[in-house]
Length: 252
View: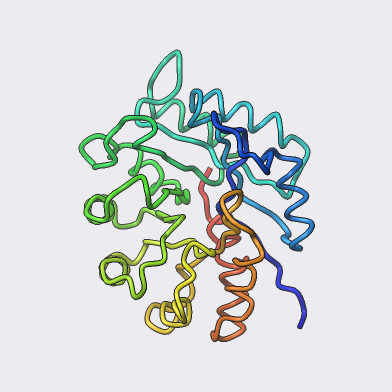
């Protein structure tokens, strides 16, 4: 079998406050994993955006992956923008001008509401720029996701770390209600024939792939996609085609 071209959409690099006893999840380690698993590229978030300060973490990530074209920085966004101006529109424009192609938010860690009354301008800006926005499933309720997508139906929201809950009744309902909602599938969503069922019901254009780094062995995610009972065109789209299209469609 010819190896898939894989682009991982969910890696998180950087040392946590409580270190992993078996792992140092820095950029060098991530590159080793990408090489071992034959993963072509990755969208990367930095833990310092969570452990320290989001905008400082963005700067750390930019320094650490400088010159590594296969690592695509995800810019951590907050509704208040960046210091010293704390004007979201200004910070967003500046990030786009610097080449931002994907963003992410972490409402619980940064203590803001993901609901549109607080974060609406952020979602509106992402939607207008066609910017993919990563959001960890564990940072939000599904009712909040429904509110977000109802208020901003063209927002390209990508849920990562979607858990294995069998046939996820609420998630299926959300996918049916909101055409712009995307999922990142990895070993976290290792439901028996789950990917086959998702593709059969919703097509393949709304799913991207993740390796679940550093939380799990990445080979499980590779296996999940490689051996899923889906058409080869769907496998290729999920492996890299969908995220490449989303990144290419960002308006600067």
